[in-house]
Image (tube, rainbow, N blue to C red):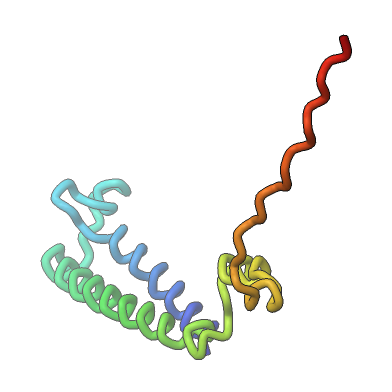
Length: 119
């Protein structure tokens, strides 16, 4: 299910890129790049269609991303652990050391007597 949603998200993202690239900004857009003489259907009707399709694809994109995030398998039950959690689990103390009370280190016994220099 997640794979299908990711593929749909990629398709919608690609279509959104194409629609945005085709739009006619204040400078003339892609139509001025390719000669500017191709005015099919009028500029006004094209702009409203492209504007509506941009907003529709953007809304679909947001919905797909949210649904994909909710259906991702690692989100349910905490089955998948991160690398940090795995490292922390491996670094834990063994059970006998963890249960033993903390005892302070014993001070060293008296230092050996210093030898007096021979005369």
